[in-house]
Length: 277
Image 1 (cartoon, rainbow, N blue to C red):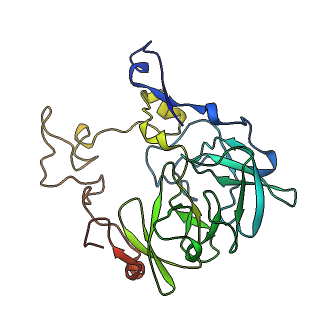
Image 2 (tube, helix red, strand yellow):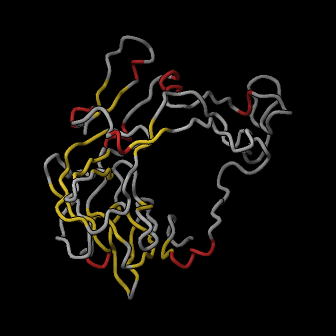
């Protein structure tokens, strides 16, 4: 997967690049595997804005992805597709019973190749199996946190984790952030690295392109009035006038720990910052 740099025809195009879609084999999604997506524009069920700077954008459909994919033998990959709702690519499977399913594509998946999922499948790239059956040191992705709950971790473009150790009924998984976490050995994972590795190298380049993605403009806090933001006010381009930056609601903006699930602390062997949880 490469990145295509556009010609420098305008100021915005000068720093713009797009993904090279030449490896995708199907432009239209499978009709039986899509549902409509209602645009919420960052609003909750009361109509109040709970996420700022959202709205507009191109209409999308939700692709129904099988994050569990268990007990499948020799499913054939019939297409590689684009998904506007995520950074990774999709692989369209033809299952042995004649039905089709979407899964997240890894770097090694190609049209015509076969993959399997289950407890007794071969150890090879693209196959999905319990963590206890995967060799130590293997690169994995699409990792379950709860047995049978479907993949929750390591699902974005280019992401990969590593199976570091096995101890009792748990295995140690080193995540992309550097965190080492305990996961039950019966949870499933896919062998390999997520595809679309060059996604991180894409430069948006223009505000209009961001609007098409459903993102509205953001205004700096120091450019506002004092009644609109703690950073606001002052004459000219002064500093924010505070010891630490704050959110529009007066809370610490940088460095404040927001982790709430304290009951899972026992599953973290090593935090993202070494020695911390």
